[in-house]
Amino acid sequence: MKKNSLKIDPTSPYYRVCLFPRCSQPFMTTRGRIYCCDKCADDHYNENRKLKKLKLERRSMDFEEEAPITIPEGSVPPSVKKSEPEAPSINQNQLEKNIEVFSSLSIDKKNGTIYSIKFLEDLEVDLRHYSYFFPLCNVKNGFCVMFGNFLTYLVSPLEILIFYKP
Ligand SMILES: [Zn+2]
Image (cartoon, rainbow, N blue to C red):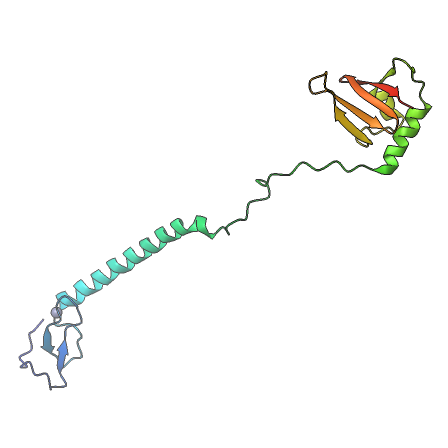
């Protein structure tokens, strides 16, 4: 590039300050140049490109860091939610049905009678609908489940002992 011979004159319309920040040298141009020399133009261009690339990289890094925070606080995916065990809701109609079926069974007055749960279920008994239940003091984890005046005890995984208590 041919150095122009114009004298630096801040009042001249040809007066410029190099746009490259690290140069910022005043210069004179009649050709509308914005840099004092080609090197400044190249350097500025390359620095801008580097800066842009850095900014892009930083932005993508920020994005990765911020991504988990975009999940609203307090919201838990449905699959993770602990489902509270549902309180057994007693269906009075089914309870009456159970009592009705028990009333039709022959039950030994003194010792009670053992019936298989399957047999009772076939008679449309649903043992989830009871009047009351209480733990037994003499049997660990044992319960007496009452259906009206009928007391039942689980005697095996498949059978219950039914008593009638008038
Ligand atoms: Zn320059």
